[in-house]
Amino acid sequence: MRMLERLRGADRCLVGTWVKIPALETVELLARAGFDFVVVDMEHSPISLESAYRAVVVAQGLGVHALVRVPDAGGSHLQRVLDIGADGILVPHVTGRADAERAMSGMIFPPHGTRGSGSTSRAGAWGLDGNAEYVRRGNEETLRIPQLEDLSALEEVEEILDTPGLNGVFLGMGDLTLSTGLKADDPGLRRHVDRLLAGAKARGLPCGVAARDAAAAQEAARDGFSFVMISNDASIFGRAAAELRAATGPLPLH
Image 1 (tube, rainbow, N blue to C red):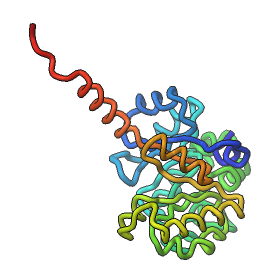
Image 2 (cartoon, one colour; image 1 turned 60 degrees about the horizontal axis):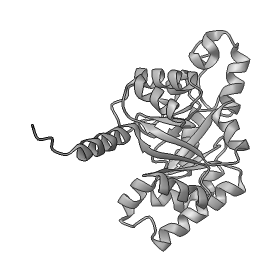
Image 3 (cartoon, rainbow, N blue to C red; image 1 turned 45 degrees about the horizontal axis):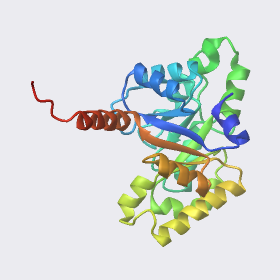
C-alpha cells in the first residue's frame, strides 16, 4: 500500500521523521523504531540523489513509506526523484498558485502535466510493469505535496489547494515564523493555519507538519494534521548522545 492510499483510509495521524544522515543504518533503525514513514531531506542536508535513492529503497523494503523533499521549487529534481519510486515529493517554498501549478505539472504525465516517461526506472519496476502501469501509478498513487512556508502562500491558500494534481499539503511552520517574525501561537498566524486545515479537510487533502517532539506531535494530531514528522535522525542521535554523556558525568579514577 502506498502512502497516499494509507492516508486516505487512516484512522490516526501517521508519524514520521526527517532523514538527514546519508546512512542506510539510520533508515533501518527508524524502521525498527516503528515510524510510519520517513522524509529524505535533500533541501537541508548533504544527501545526494544516489543517497536518496538508497534510503527510499531500504525504507520501502522494510515496510516504511518514503517521501523525498527536493532541494527547491525549481523542478530540476522532480523527474529523477519520482523515478526513484518514492511514495511522494515535498516541494519547498511554494509561494503561490503559479509555483504550485509548475510543480504539479512536473509530477504529472501528459496530457495534464509535463513529466517525462521513464518506465525502465525503478518507479516502473525497471520496465517489468509496462508503460501503462508506470503512468497509472505515477498519476494516481504518488503524493504531490507543496510546502506552504511563506505568508503569501497562506494568504492564497484556497487557490493553491485547488491546483489540479495537488493531493497533499505541508505547513512549514519553521520558515513561516522566521520570515514573519511571529510566534507559532500568534492569533493572526493561527487564523491562517486554521484556514489551511479547514481548506484541506474540505477537499479531502492530507495535511502535514513538522514537530519538535512527541508532545508537539500529539498537539498537531489534535489540531487535525494527518501526518507529522517528529524531529530528524541527526537530532535524535545528537540528543540521545548528549543525554547519555551528561548522565554518565565525570568518572574519577579510583
